[in-house]
Image 1 (cartoon, rainbow, N blue to C red):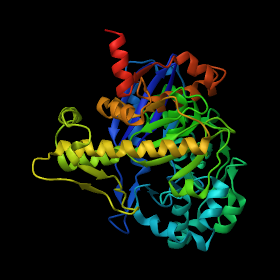
Image 2: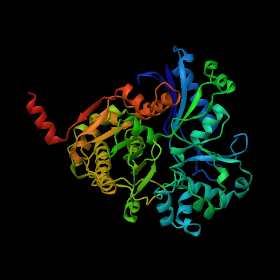
Image 3: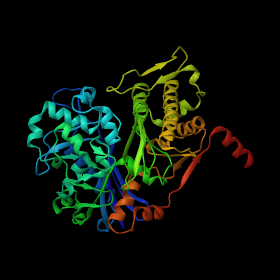
Image 4: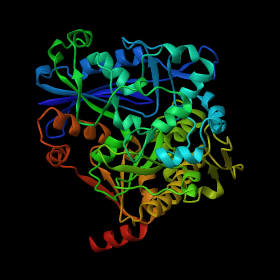
Length: 474
């Protein structure tokens, strides 16, 4: 038996076929990228139709040679916050505004004319990030009010894709929890926030918890994917990739997890989140956990997006293996080269590399970027421990960047705690598949599916512990 997970990321879109023991039996991917907006070439939008077609092609490739009739569930996981207004048939009235788009920065600065940031934080628990859904909707309200007037629904990007598969409009709860439009006490959209913004509650389709069925794959959608055998298969709600990476990592409550990709997202599964103004000022947030009733307090910052910039600027045409080999011979401290990793156009725009003199190389810049991001992780972990009232015994690391052994060892050395990396790097896909199998009745609960998957780790010890371990074993 299989689940088919469609994973829409900012860099790649992928389809993965996972069996009931957590083994990835098939996979395929294609590159993903934003397009410039029609109004301004500096704007960023996603082409939802292209993404869906790419995912369909990836599904065909991933299932090649496998019995498609053994697929018991389909699920979709994506980055958060992004979505679009649609008509009653699910057709987009305006392109999906990307989280990369700078247009919402000014909107966030002036949100106080509708509702104060302090009140937004208190109700939603979500930190003030310019890419949040709330600012996209306010931008549309102020610039395209005609679209809001005639819109039938707002669909998050995971639900746009699910609607294309099933014809059913729904709201993945974990996606809603990233929007800054919800109430963390009730787990639903906040009537007060919507009222202040002048948004209708019926603009948002009914909430669907992770692991529940949104609808069945239509014959038309299955045929379009070239897999008629998938018609009638349930599409199980997943949603925001971070929540499923955390669950798929095997993390218990009060166990910090770093999902490391384009964004570094540090979160913990908790029954509560007590965030003070100074926590929000440091970038803290709280989202809905994949398990109803739990929250994920955490912090996020641009991560390997900066590494990708270094690769493009300094290692064009080279592989990451070449980058890592060059960085490995650079000593800690990078011979005085440091980086300020504040590269977001919508932020302060104060990113820089300092200490460059003759004799320093591109490898110094690369290693300095990894070190700067790791010191940022250390300060953010201390903040999360303060918010959550716990002390980290170790850190679980998931995401594509977990494959970078140099960076992972650097994290253990700087944090001075062990870093545990899942032997399977696809924690998001596995986590979503655990909920998919539970939703399809293959397992009674996602936890039972997780036990059946048998998560294994590789542990990176900090320098002193590593040296002591090696001494004992020689």
